[in-house]
Length: 135
Ligand code: AMP
Ligand code: ZN
Image 1 (cartoon, rainbow, N blue to C red):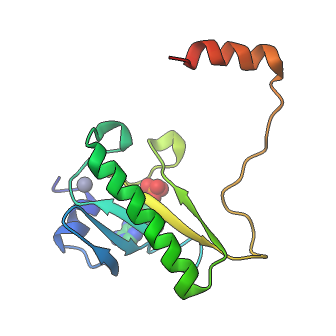
Image 2 (cartoon, rainbow, N blue to C red; image 1 turned 90 degrees about the vertical axis):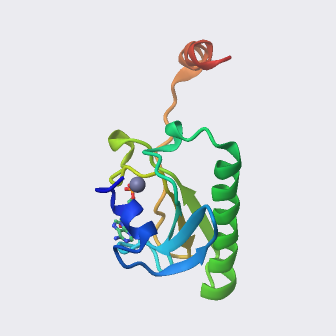
């Protein structure tokens, strides 16, 4: 995809700080990090989001790479943990329409980044949703 910023990063047309690369993906520093050491795992092939990627081996590789980078953030940056975040479509906060995984290191006593307010829908509503979503 000629006008895709991540395709252009993969091709080397836009500079990036790659901390890992193999035949199917790169891991590069996010230029707008949520925390020190925030990394993006980007497949070399273009998929707009995870719903477009049917390549199970690639999806497994991306997650394995994310886990490895998270471990590296803890070992080398002194992170105490990490979040793996993956946004799909604008409503979910996706700004770059090329599948990617965020690996965000987490440090004790820093503000929580990935969080939500748990609701109390009640049993009836939970059951309704279950009926809609189940196999
Ligand atoms: P998302 O909101 O999940 O689509 O995340 C897109 C991410 O890409 C954001 O965290 C941006 O900071 C990051 N980003 C955008 N342009 C670049 C770039 N040229 N190099 C590295 N990261 C980028
Ligand atoms: Zn792309």
